Image (cartoon, rainbow, N blue to C red):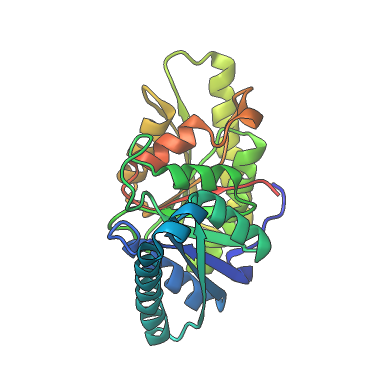
Length: 283
């Protein structure tokens, strides 16, 4: 497993929020993460506009800027109450995903925290378009928080398929488990069409990772589950063990992994999970 930035070493956490009810849980989680880790919290919101609108209808832009100020005022008030200082970032543009990624790169963010979807509506299996884009292109890991999500306090579910992306996720899960004093369930999912060789890969992957976690003094168990689809198996396994955080790699074992924004399994887990999902990038 390759080295990743540990949770305790999160120097900069970038919170992306649009002030909607879908973003509210992400705000709370980002503030809590920054408080626990002593991190700098960067709070970003967008004024969705373009040069033409700004020239023709400046009053619309002014109204949007006022709303952005209100959003960050609310975040700052919550953060201050928990002893966390924030840096406020307001950016103009038409593509929130691009702006989030750009600011993460510019500010050398260690983690992005955002909601599953935003105020602009549904897209791609109930995962917002910006969220999918950020998970696929961000330079760091992304914690996606659905409505009702919170910082983990029960158990982490780590999904692995033995790929290098899963190994990166395993390293992050170890750091999270250590920092939050949580047990980890390591799961790999097989489907009816898998060969015996593929099933052996799944068994070997969970055993290898669970053993590595145990050597690091993390309470861990390993299981291979059968399901119609990998994402269904991951989500159901999380429910079965009462996990309140799922950790996955950004891609899986597919031969097309380098050509897509985010692996299809990871995207479907984001869309179907009821708890926060951390999408981990390779180093």
